[in-house]
Image (cartoon, rainbow, N blue to C red):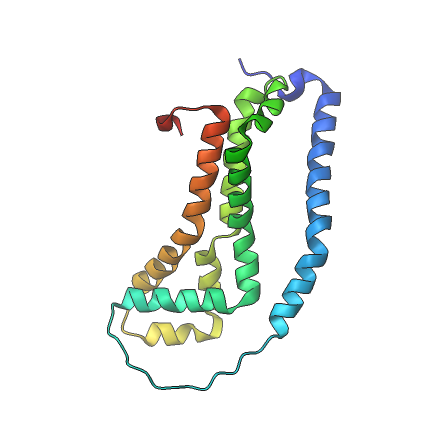
Length: 193
């Protein structure tokens, strides 16, 4: 039978919750001033380019939509910042676990944590990727310009495929690093993840 967190000791649970809230508060306090100034600086920057006609290449509709998504993602600073923080934190956390796998062993001394920590880490990774999914945000960003895509000679499914395809290179590498870090920290065999 699974034991409750803290072995049923309410004081241990309270300390765990306070520590968790404290860590989130510290991270928020550390990022807030930089985040605000960075978004202001990125939002007020304008770029003027002179158009120059160049050779046009033919490609598939999905690749054209993919390039459009990439241009929007990397060309809109607030979009890049909001959707890039989740994969960045996942990459940093996974990298930390790869470099310092023994640091996680301290948490495993808490009664009941050996069974719950892998589930908590998986939920945290899923949350980081869920918050940062550019494909869901991209669909709503079409807004008033949705008629442009609807008038193009592509199916709505191709549009969704391009948006989902663009999410993969942003979300999969950080997830792979995080999984490798968890695997190394827990000393799991390759097939168990």
